[in-house]
Image 1 (cartoon, rainbow, N blue to C red):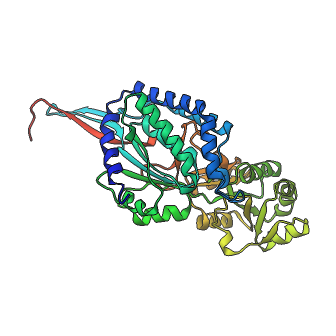
Image 2 (tube, rainbow, N blue to C red; image 1 turned 180 degrees about the vertical axis):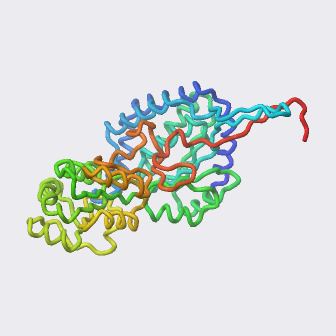
Image 3 (cartoon, rainbow, N blue to C red; image 1 turned 120 degrees about the vertical axis):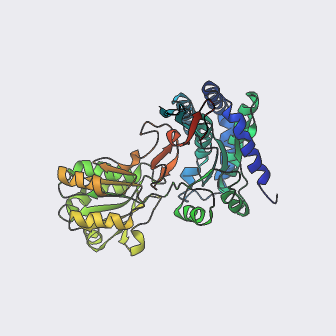
Length: 415
């Protein structure tokens, strides 16, 4: 294959067929897809195993790649949940009758052709397809080579559903993983309406630097939790442990703990048993390193500058002590990826200041950053977490897979 233009062209053509589907018909496609997923669990697992066997089990991406029976059933349920969400298209945003008699209306419409580039997350294949079909969008899926077999079987199952419904299978397509075709996708302004990268900072940077198609960034999360001097330390320990340990390979997991010096020793003493139980590696500043060594914590080493602003995606994190509230804010402003940031405090004024001034898609007071998720926010599945400020910010879910269109109805008026 020398070009993916045929796939791009067929995607643009498929938008016409998708636009003609009623809301109910789109829902029926998703219900059928959910059923097919649950009926083919063993087939999906067999293909997923082929991918897993090619990856080192210690790789931080392994958990993202892994599918099991429970995850597939949950994925099918998420498709059903998306089917039940309100149709985000054809929503009347404004309507007015001008003095000349023209009826001017503004409604929501599908974006068109959505290209998504992602890594090691086969669940994204289903999430994106479900969200796009529900919102009347065609999707071009460019997953990573490490998930090729899993993505292939998932897209093949989608095509079975589309064929059964008498629909164009090009509504959802899997693109080849050869990197030579990525630039073609990124510059396909004739065929593609928007590109969404989901993955590492390196992937996002590459897409941003090379795309001519409009881009909405999602993925990289450098998340801080600040334990302020008035914090309830029992709550703080539960929150920090959850944010780091519950699923370390995801973008809303904790990367850096900031601790007020006044409570650092007491807090770390309470935190250590949780970190020890899961062998969490810690990169600590001078003061935190000294405290952890005195407390006989073994998995600690001195942090370098590179350990702050680093997305670990593993059972590792950095720890820094701060002398003041302002120092914590300054650190977050410098190193945050503007994904999710948390303060643990009982000082209402400081909580309000933190929530109002920290620049991130989601800010938390006394709760784990692990909640930054479309499903947890009641939005259904998501394509990713947008960290930019145009069009969408936070969970990029169904409600944001639309744009606006003006409908003007007249009766012979001329200007």
